[in-house]
Image (cartoon, rainbow, N blue to C red; front, side, top):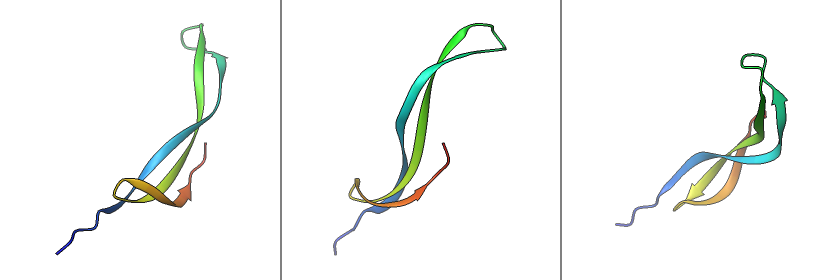
Length: 55
């Protein structure tokens, strides 16, 4: 009997970076704009893009 390992996970791709002024501490802060996407995988190899979320 063989076991097939199938599952899904969310990967986050960085699509932009920059700086903004934080009103809480009053300093310039770095940020990364990320785009999360859910992938179906077989043996931890991403094969099928399943769902894309808002940034």
